[in-house]
Length: 311
Ligand SMILES: Cc1cc2nc3c(=O)[nH]c(=O)nc-3n(C[C@H](O)[C@H](O)[C@H](O)COP(=O)(O)OP(=O)(O)OC[C@H]3O[C@@H](n4cnc5c(N)ncnc54)[C@H](O)[C@@H]3O)c2cc1C
Image 1 (cartoon, rainbow, N blue to C red):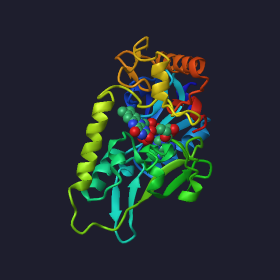
Image 2 (spheres, helix red, strand yellow):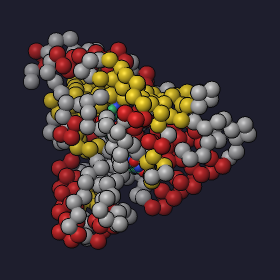
Image 3 (cartoon, rainbow, N blue to C red):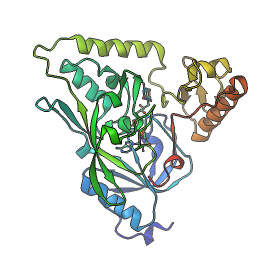
Image 4 (cartoon, rainbow, N blue to C red):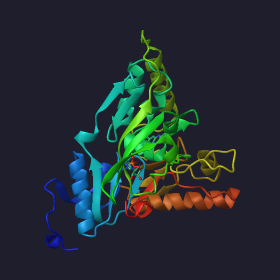
């Protein structure tokens, strides 16, 4: 598409932006346009621009759980900026209100500082509140977003109207919500907060530190990765990592990407990987596990833009 034919490109747009800069795994091609929106008005302006010019768009959180194509994305990649990054504790209503762009780890450690236990998982999962709600992020069944979620303010790009979605309407499941495959955008979210602790103890912060240490001992640190590649299968008592390891996938390489030696469900960018190197590893892992165990592994990681066409 000839960008000079497009009318009224908003001033905060960047053209031909390298998306690998925005993903944890550090792969991905260019976006024709990248918009970091700082207000709801800018978000709506971006969607209107996309629709008027017939360009697809999708929202990126912190890019922790996505694999972006190497080919240029002929559309608009959107991220929530400063205006979506604040949060507040409301002890009168027993809730926390957090903007969708708030880093989940920051929220988790603030909750721990306030003396609340049970939210430590938020302090160890990379990404934003919006990404975590979309993915129903968590570390086990007792520690996941769904358990503390009250409601979210969601923008419908079709009508450009915001609507409050309560828990019952979120359709949460294992690493998914009704938002995941829709084109709706989470603006902010309310989470349940128990009664204020009168004499905050150090217990909650200690629980978070222990969880961080446990993670450090089990998972590759400071790597370019998107964490778990596959969901644990429902029809097996074994984890995806175990199945991949037993299928001989540990340390298998494709171009600049490798299956981690610590955890076979993690893929690492050794420095110069492309998204197609990583897709090769994903397909090889699925094939080998199917041949060995007859189990079809389902991806947790989201392929952009194909998994979210229209988003
Ligand atoms: C080292 C590492 C460890 C991890 N450990 C865990 C773990 O223990 N548990 C776990 O559950 N996950 C884990 N993950 C995966 C990842 O952190 C989570 O899925 C996280 O919630 C993704 O948030 P994000 O902001 O990075 O979203 P992104 O990866 O940017 O996006 C994920 C999806 O959410 C959508 N999205 C993002 N924001 C919004 C919004 N505001 N409105 C609508 N849609 C939105 C995107 O379009 C995309 O479809 C890990 C990842 C890494 C790199």
